[in-house]
Length: 167
Image 1 (cartoon, one colour):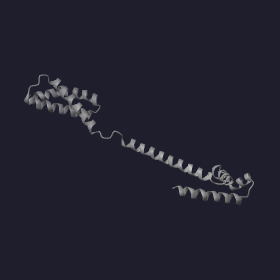
Image 2 (cartoon, helix red, strand yellow):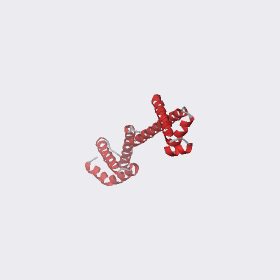
Image 3 (cartoon, helix red, strand yellow):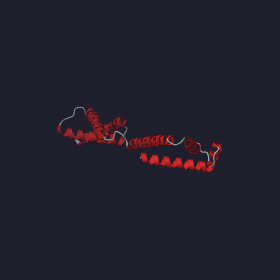
Image 4 (cartoon, helix red, strand yellow):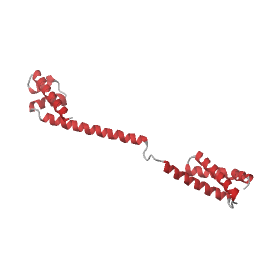
């Protein structure tokens, strides 16, 4: 095949072949590369053999090149999950771990509080959980402020000791 024949084929078929490939791959740059490679292969083949149906040969070569490209991309693709997705999974795992640790700490706290005398438990609950002030707890239970403070100090010391022993 002469250079003039190849140039004529290029001028006649390159743009339609590029459009055909661009519709398939949705990448105009890749389509242009595949068209160029198709014409190169046609030129190499045309020097050795005669090609009866040049447009058919071009489309066949271009289609085969496209299939080869897709296969290579699939083989190269080692990341089945994006880095963002992995980071999201790691964040979720960290959150679950944090939740599990918090649940364990709540269970340990609940157990430690259950071991306290009833009056101390009640004072702790009213002050630390329900948010009552020392004076409000004292009025509610009919005891002195200093008694509330002593019970809370005893409860906090015991709870801290038990939680540290569990670690």
